[in-house]
Length: 298
Image (cartoon, rainbow, N blue to C red):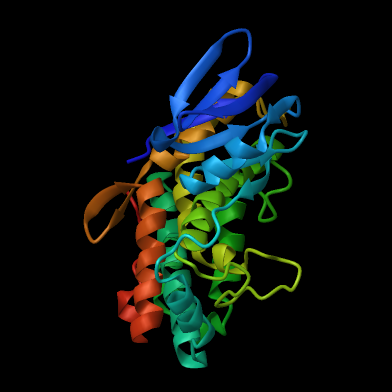
């Protein structure tokens, strides 16, 4: 099973030799592709051959390319590797309105429940109880928009700004973490043959990752918990610092190795993305929302 996360932050040439990723800088390093889970390219002077890009996709490596602000800008996904991909895509296109709304309801219930747990861990006990009630009263399709109400209360309390625009460092850190989990979900969704553009709630014609943006919702508080608990404490007193430094980015990449819970068992977030997508496939193939499994805060 792939386990390495590789971050390239300096100029380099990437090539392929004997099913290994060859990284040429001042020295040359060769890493087996079968060991690599994620590759983050965070320098615009990295040169990659077409053969290595094709091999990375073939081996299912989650390849992330960052922009000039060091934030994930795009990902490279495998194409046509799922043995039952066509069947999964057909089932996805056949999702009925009732199942779609129930899937979204369950998704938002778990997201708000996870937000409540983050608040509890940060000693906002009264507000966590309020979010518990919001989670329990989400209706089919979230017609009451409990998600937005919970998000406003949650971020206003944790960050002092419901828009997440004011605490600039936190905004950048959270977005970086979300992007990493988003790319892991996109990789897994594509590997199952699902159509990333067709969501259960998100439906923008300009977004090719609508389904990804649906399934990430319950993961967001897990990222929040990791950033606030393990990365942000190093920046206490540095409110003026709006930029992520190299150490920040290296720590945030490790979010995929953070733990969450499904059915009372601990798994890494990377493993959880696989489990959630597989459960989604099962739910839509059997028209049964109870088969859809989502992560809890560890």
